[in-house]
Length: 471
Image (cartoon, rainbow, N blue to C red; front, side):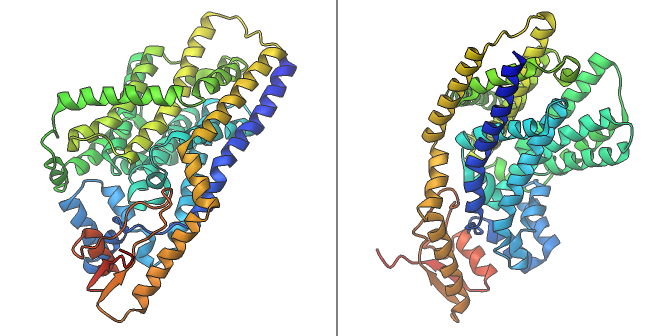
């Protein structure tokens, strides 16, 4: 039995690593062809050049949004240093950061397993994430989007690990507390979605410690204070009013709550039954069954508490779109929901398994044949999902058929046209090759369009106008 399990684990770890590489390598290659988007990326730096760095951030905070940390990152994008190369490097940093955060989280939750196993778990989550995420360009390549969602998502996973470290270690507590509070400050200042996530997690920590351990510690108090101050800065921003007044359905609590749960139910069905999630869950249970009870201490949580927190975190991410602007959540917000759906799913499965396993001490009598059946189901479901995934088709098509390279070449030709023109008004052709893994939006034929004005201001032109000579 152990011999079969060891073979299963060894081969499984390699399969998980291959799954990771199958989606990571093309994404890394696509990064080489990435460019700043006319949608917002130029606007932030154009404002900096006009008013100064601090005044530009104050302009957005006072006139558009309370996302103070997102404002800081957007106004510090590589265009501030006239660097296009930075937009090719940052996605690589994001991929690395997300994988490290996932690896680090599983390392804390299952400390007795090997590092290759932890990397494999991170690979499975990343693989499933890429299969069904709502928008790859908004998740990793369009800076105006990923600084307000992907970055705080990574910070949230790191925050969980830092908090676990604080309660586990007797040394470096001050440094860990500073890191934890910094993450709280940054996450709250990134977006409404991530604000609700971290507030729910802090509230859950307080509830768990008070009800089950009947104690309060310094970390709990400090994070509560930082969360309160950060939320104050976020919600009192004068710019928030501009968003809330955009739709008559905004600020309708009943509509927002009902819509959030309906949307979550629809998404959960799609993510559960149209991916290999259930088969991976069975493999996860087999792995957990070989981990000692003592090594599963982070799964020893009441099932009802874990399930409620899971549903709360997911629905809370959908709620701001309905409440704030009265519409369905954007693709970048759904990216965030899906990531925490995957992580929370495997955690809740672990909690349920731990609960049942401590009350039913039987073993999982899996023979070589049964391991073989499981492997066969995994391979079939993975292959089926991989080749059916529109995201996988998109990233491989954009890369291998030269769409990404053509997009980059056309964009660089437009840079040259702007820089070589001596006229105050520049006419640019549209980007004809639009790889959807990298392309988000373009300038308009209207010189007064916001994207046109921002690009013109950044390059020191009176106006930049798109003209299609082929029409």
